[in-house]
Image (tube, helix red, strand yellow):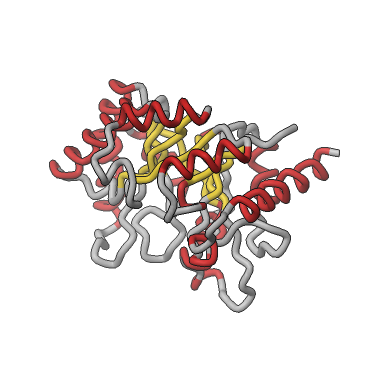
Length: 274
């Protein structure tokens, strides 16, 4: 069975939106994630209607805008930022918004305050998402300094505010490995991010975004195993390639490398299914 792949714009962050969509079309990948942290449509004033038309012309769907940053540090300013991004996502035809927690040492509240803030943010976001018909994709990050490392904490907070209808998890294979959390929650997952690490000299606690490459046979963090476990648990959503390494970003023509990664993961999946 073909895996349901998606491309995050990080596969070619220096290419224009049009070139990124053309890459997805050329590879036969029907789903993309656009970003608001790269030079492009959301930051350069391009209308969401133009983005929607270009995606339609390329024959791809926009599965998410990545991302509302520091979402769990809720404030009137964050709420206004969220409302603007929700409006853009709805108008461009995106299905969801990725929600990234605060990930630095400047935000270190006590445990009760941290979890209360998470619930407050989810409660503030839920009516916006419901009104727009969007999903909020909560992405715990595995780094030790992150304010939300655990998928279990995210699920418990979503349930506490009775908002399972509008929130799902992002299972990021890199962050899952770094966090060391064994639970997968495939039934609560709305999107999977995949990237590989191939440098054996980097211990898990030292892994950072620049180590994240396209998944291939040298991968050290068991992307294939994670994908298969999620699928076995019932996950049927997109598997989105999200590398951050400079070696990927610098590719003048990313198609061969991306195509090879897609082929590798599909081949390994076929072996498991045989």
